[in-house]
Every structure is written in structure tokens, then in C-alpha cells.
Image 1 (tube, rainbow, N blue to C red):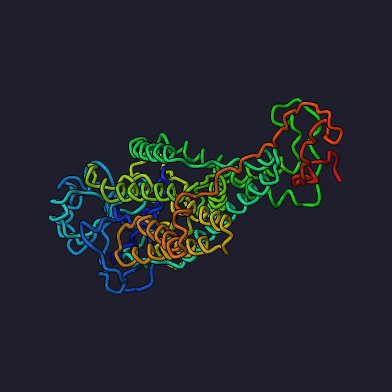
Image 2 (tube, rainbow, N blue to C red; image 1 turned 180 degrees about the vertical axis):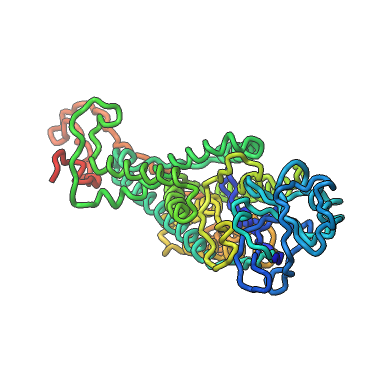
Length: 554
């Protein structure tokens, strides 16, 4: 017996999708196809077994409760593809659900034949990957019975009676709490780290330490021209991915592996270098990278980080645990970017966030009117095209599996995902706020206020997703929350001109000691023969690592 029910497992492809190139994160609900359940049981018995089905609710909707689903007899016609009237058995399918093979004709031709001959639904068995049974608007209006796809392996295991249904999924899941903590924690730690590094660098410059910049990693100050170039590159990359997804996605995965391993090394090295053992260096050699004799533990850490990245790349499709490894690499990458990329003024922050705000809204809400399919370019790229031959997903997201129990776990393991862009873009503003706090010696008022505003903006994004049940670009809420909060604090403290221009973040100039010009000799015995140069104050040596001075293991 077959009972068909459709509560709509929405968020089939994605729950929260990121914009790829601008790395702007989006919350989006994709409902191209929906997962449901086919409950097979013996006649007269309620106990049975559930199997995953994939259907399109535009043909006909299914009940969301198994108790409300009609139990109908299945008609095994898997020796046929049901593409012509000659394949219909005598008497048709009155109050039955025929089960036929996929192929040779369209979904519409199959379901039309089934409906004309009295069927109450149609199960199409597929040996290939399950895809939504699509049609056009006029075909949807003509058909009023459900049509769903069932995998071939499940067909071999079914019983005689079946009930098809699709349990309703909650819009919000407990995993949102984990995503919220990861996102807020990353921007807070990254912003604090960026400010602390800037304070150390300024201190060393004030001490006139010429080696300060060599000891510290380089930072990149973003200029308006760089912002313009970045946005143009993001738009170009997104469009290229839309048209050449299968060719470019592998390259994106490879770039992510390299960048995330560098980020992980950058995050772990401050802890590893403080370990009290293994301080030896590489012996004298002429190798290109090893010529400077780096510490052995630095090489071991590099090998470890590369190993973690390669492990993720090999097992990236393992839904049980690969997502956790991807989150670790993603957080490390975001922290590395937040401490390396620096916005020098609030003016630059406003320009970057505003431009990406417009970028986000355009590629989510406007591009559906420009594409033939009516789908958003952002969503198509972030979710991965349904006709992709590689079935790969772009990795620039934090992802957590749904924690609520659902029988739909038989079909797929749904994830809630947050793109790196919704962490990095507001995170750069938070880092600027912390550096400004250090400049004016305030008790981290700007930093704390902007971090709290980011958390509130993320919560508003989740609420908007639950209430509207439609795609919501996260920057639509994050940008106003963080920018307006920072601006309000500056206005209340009457520091807006200084906050806007970032005065004080320029490099401290090296003051040259004036050299006294030689004076003519005088016959006055009391006058000195030459002027003594002014005495220099003793300079403190820059902080150095003890392990960098040692060449032998302890």
C-alpha cells in the first residue's frame, strides 16, 4: 500500500547560501525540488518502512502527516517506461499508484498517461541521480496527481502497499545556535587580534625599531581603487561560475585548500612557538626555502596544516564529519584574513560595506529577472547547478548539519550554511573599531558595540528567514546594524571626524637626529672647538624569540 504525503522538506539544496566571490553570506531557501517519504507496508498493517522520494509540488502537493495520507495499492510496472498508451495495462490504474521506469519520454507524458487511466499518483524509478520532475506552467495546471522519483535500489526493497508523505521541517534548527556562536566568535577574535597586532607594531615603531616590520607579518591597507577592483573581480567570477561551474569549481576547491592551510598555520604558530621543546633549527643547506634555517617545529606545523587541508579535500563529501573539518579550516582562514587585511579609515569601511550590500541585493533579487530560468545567479552558484556533472559544492562556507531529528535523514543530510563573506566583510569593520579604540585609548567601546551589533544583525537575519520563508541576503541586515551602530557611537562621543578619517593610523615617521653643522674655530678659550652631538636615549631591543637564537635542540 502506498500513502503519499508532502509536507515539503524545503531547503533542499541549501538553508543559508554564501555569495561566492564577494564572500557575502546569504540566507536562502531553494524550493526547486522537495524530498518526501514513501511509506511501504503490507496490506492491513500499519507498520512498514520509509523510503526517500524526490518530487515537485507544482504537479500536486502531498499531505504533511502520514495519518492523513491515503494508503493505495502499488502497481508494479517497472518493466515499462509508460511513454505510450500501448504500455497501459487493461483496466488502467484505478485508485492505484503505478511504479514505472524513468526514460524515453518526459515526466509530463508519463504522468498524463497515468492520470488519464485513473492513477492517484506516479512513482518513477531512476537508476541515476534523483532530480526534480520538471514541467511547464500549463502542464502543472493540467495534472492534479503527485509524481515522485524513487531510487532503483529502494525499488528492489519495497513492499506491496505504500504511503507517500513529506514530513514538515522546522524553518529554524538548533544548529543556528552553533552557526551564531562560530560567526560572532570569529569576528570578535579576529577583530581583537587585528587590533592587538596593530598596537604592537606601533609600539615597535615608536621605539624606532627598524626590524619591526620584518618580524611582523605584512598587512594590506585597502584603498578605494582596491575596493573597486575587488568588486569587479567578484562580479566577473560569479558570472563565470554561473556559466562554467563544472570547470571552475575544482579550482576554487584547490584555492581554498591552499588558503585555509596558510590560515591554519598562522593561527597555530603563536601557540606552537611557545612550546618549551623542539627548538632546533634546520642544518646549514642551500635549499631555496630552507636556506634561512627555519625552526624544525615550524616545518612540522606546516606539514600538519597541509595534511589537514588535504584530508578535507579527499573526504570533503563525507557528510558525517567532513563538515567539522571544513569549519575549522574556514574559521582559520577568516581569522587570517581579518588580521592581514586592514581598512585604514571608517570612510573605506563604509565604501566597502555599502558596495557589497548593493552587490548582494542585486545578485539575489535582481538577477532572477535577467536569467532564462528565473533563478538567482547567486543561488545557482552557491547551491550548485542541478545539472552539474561534478555535483561539487563551493567550500567557502561554515556548515552545520541539522540537529532536529527527521525521517528525511534517509534522503539527505541537510545543512545550514553561512558564507565567509558575512563574516569577513563586517569583521573588517569590527577590526577597525578595535584599532580605533587603541588609538584613542578607550575601553573598547567601539569594538564591543560593533560586535554586539553584528550579533543582533545575524539574529535579525535568522528571524527574517523564519518569518518570510524566503531568501534573505544577510548583508541586508548586517551592514546597517554594524555601520549605524559604529556611526552612532562616534557621534555620541563627538569623535566622528577622527573616526571617519582614521587619523593616527598612518605610519609613525622616523625622526632624524639633526646633524650639527661645523662652526668656525674661535680664539675664545672658553668656547668648545666643536659641538657635541645630542645624546641618544638608549633603545630597547625588540622582543626576540629565544628559540630563534638557538641552533641546537634542547
